[in-house]
Image (cartoon, rainbow over all chains, first blue to last red; front, side, top):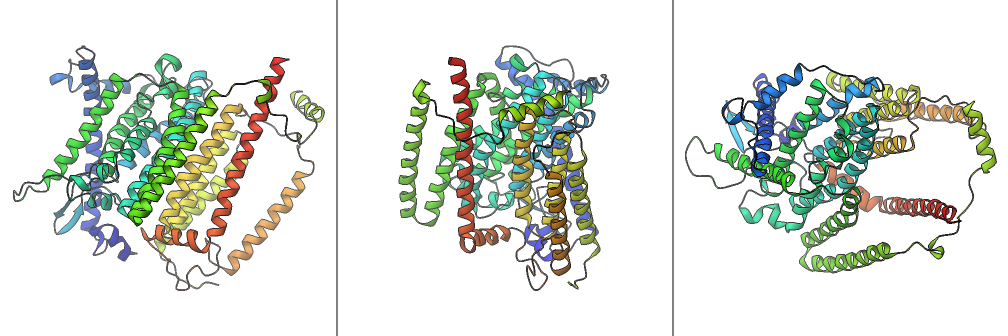
Length: 411
Length: 190
């Protein structure tokens, strides 16, 4: 058991001793505290940046530049009444916020924040965990957090949250396919699932970053798909204020609402960090040769890149109008999935041999052309009498029998 | 019988996963509300994922959660909510006559098969001698290589046949869905 643990994390090379255990616990605590702290800052940053873009002042009362506003809001939410709607499904209503929060926390654990440092003679990776399934953990956790949204919407026993839940389930499933396909492209080029290896493979300069090495396309697809997965604008049809009141968390108040809010911003930070990890080399960057503080610079690079994407999300929210639901589905299924699938095949071809790559590219372009033609034909199709198909087959039971049963059930 | 001595942590992990699977599986049957049944199903699937991790099959565990818990049960919930069958129902009508008898026979056969498997082979996977030494075939990230090689060489035909089956199912579903809408349009026109 120990032998293969060492291949995953050099910390366990000499077995699990007390010192190693303490280091792991400290890593977890520091990671948790850093995430919580950055969430508070992120909420402040988003409100301040949006208000600047909209020529408003934004939070300013608490602390310098209104920095403590988030804490004040947290305290306020803490003392609010905790409402439980009469129509609610009690168990699912209480469970849902945790199903959103816990995956958000776990996903952050695989993000490599810096390089490797020596603490008391132990080589320590600056990431909370480096499991062999690596980046798949992120996919699994985003799969779980869907349940938080769906259950919150359904269990509220209210119309608009239910519609939000149905939208969430369809949207997240659709975009997970494109997301998974781009991750496969990255994994193919790296040859490993582990986030540490993905970052290590990009460490030798900007030209090795997956952003450039894989062509820009997977990065763009990933950015769009992850924004949809986060339910952030312009893909926030799940909590579209102008259509669905507040979306899935309409009926939530007090601490439970705070948990949803916290998880949303935590996910924004984590996904910015995941984009940086997958496509921009994570902590890779220029390190000046200053003794004793060399390990600080990768962390600074990582932070700078992550803040860049976090700002990008705020900018999206301020600048882009929300997509309509059918536009969202068209973008996901008809454009992103074929694009990411085809690009994955091309990259796989080039990884074997350039000639295979060009052959694959020709085939994929042919397939894209056929698909585009099919979409155009499908959209231009008119519903007329001869476009209606005749009924195929029979119902399993005659309608008379079925009706008799349903009528009996009503009595 | 397998005479391997198991370490205490392994036994604890196995007990946890077994408990998750059993509680989840019983919950699926016992819950009156379909949404609660779906939640229990997720619990059982998580238990299976834990069992996979205990067997050093990390990749399978991840795929188990991504595909089954993350996508398939979401679709179940989608259908449950969309069709509005999320009310407590008492099943008094039997759509298929005599299905309870067949269900009983099916359960008996399955349980007998499981007992036979447990008595003769490996305790979780049910396969006879997954690896002769008692060690896992692959650990950590080598899982992907192992599964990829197996799926695309030894079991290629089964893999492609499954893919074809899924395509046929999708085409069939699209055809049936189209027929319903066509019939509606006809009804509204006349």
